[in-house]
Amino acid sequence: MGKIKTAKRQTIWNVINIKSRGIQTPQTYIHAFECLKEQDPLIQLRGNRHMSIKSMSQGSYIEKEGYTRSILVKLSAYDILDSDKFYNRRSKENVSLYLDPDIVANESEIELIFVPKIHRFAMPKSSKISLKNVLKYFQEALDKTMGANSFDVTIVKDKDVIQRIFSSYAIYSIEADFTYSNRDPSQNFQAVFDQKIREMNPTQFKMNIKGTKDQPLEAPSDGLIEAAANMSESNGYIKARIREQAGGKVTTINTERYPLNMQVNNAGDDIYTATYNELINRFGNEPTEHEQ
Image (cartoon, rainbow, N blue to C red; front, side):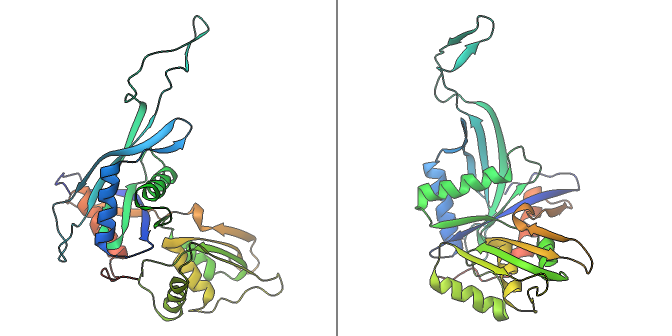
């Protein structure tokens, strides 16, 4: 990471979780990013809009285990022009132009920080490139370079919204779609639940649980609903039909619509160091050296 000093300010970042379906170590993720840099896959976002790597570099700081502390990635999104699809609006004629195939248009970029220790990266919420497109790029790029279904890429959700679900007055239905975690910190039933899913090694795990108006679902502490909701934070999504308060309206919450907005307070460090520290504070209390 560079030593660019910025004024004291607060920035908002979204967070994406990357999970290997095989060996889960920081070195696994570093190798995957090295392959992305070497192969630089071109990913179509929509129509003639594409995305690729503009630059990638490993930070100079090293974790105590000996691997890099962070990887700084800059992505470019742009339109690839078709030389046979130009139009002269004055003469009302279609025209063809000779264009260097490497010349593209309407380029925009985004800079991200990836932390191998916690297999997550942060991107500025204010970016001109959407979170959805960054997610699409990494999922498809990893599929191309590392093999289909070798990695899962998911948006980290707002924990407060998840809390609203299993602390609501009544829960009428739960629809969950997720995979096992990167051995994120958990305990009691959630730890057992995560391990049992891991033992099945599914590409996808879905739950659909329904109650009724007169008999809503029970959501005891350390139960199935709480475990599924907590696991969905970094590994999928949960959709719930609930009544948050007695006498309140029945509403539906879909956590896919609520990405984490991570606040980073920059108090003199460069913005990337401040973001690294916030990521570690939130997600860094888990083991980092393990294999399935």
